[in-house]
Length: 344
Image 1: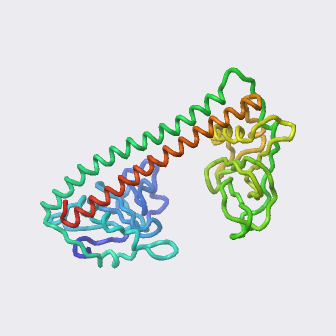
Image 2 (image 1 turned 30 degrees about the vertical axis):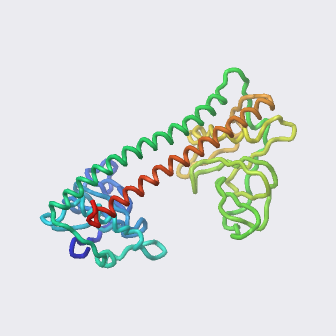
């Protein structure tokens, strides 16, 4: 590969040169990171992630600025086709060459790779064939992604019907539930303990003590480490101090699973109403004032049963569709392997 192309180092771009609507793209290891009115290189090229997302590839046809966590390639345009080189590098699986705590690639390791490269006309033929095959695959992938979106929309639509029913009165969630916050600092988590520890309502680790033993809904109180999210959990656990632990009051006829589903539906509103300049967070009053339809307990259980069945079917279909996408990616790889083995 060292006889085919050269990997040149990218260069830092000062903050003062970064413009919201700049004329040119500044590329990081895995794609566009900023805009700028300056460019560093004025020929079509390929950005190769050098640090971080090491080995990731971005095909570039316009003037650009490669940041210092990247390489960009130079090559003899009379002997090699840019798109062919991009596909050739794809077939090399460059991320496997990355080493270190913050993965990085030494360009000399890329130069050592041995590949058979045909004359330019044959390169162009291979690119044309692969473009046609990949076009069909990408069309199928887009159809499958649309199917995934449709399946998710079906579940969201049913949740919306439950929440916006005109046949029921609404009340404040805070009248029927108790809302507490976790107490532990995230640094107190001990890997290997007996109890789950939730940070922003996602299980972060196992700890050796617990503060809660109940059937609860956990709602992320801020978006510091993840987007706002919600989880249902029953048993012994502890939670980070910015995670709200919501339990149903003993005298309230309210199904905790319905609370979970309705809060799941309400996440979009919470995101809109969150406060804070940098890290956004929810005030406890926002949760207490959350409106929920006043169904009877029997109606709640029937709705939860229906939603659980729909959720299970949704997840089953999502799994099938994601597997289809993965299979199509494997098909791409097989075409690449055939192309660079002289079998295409």
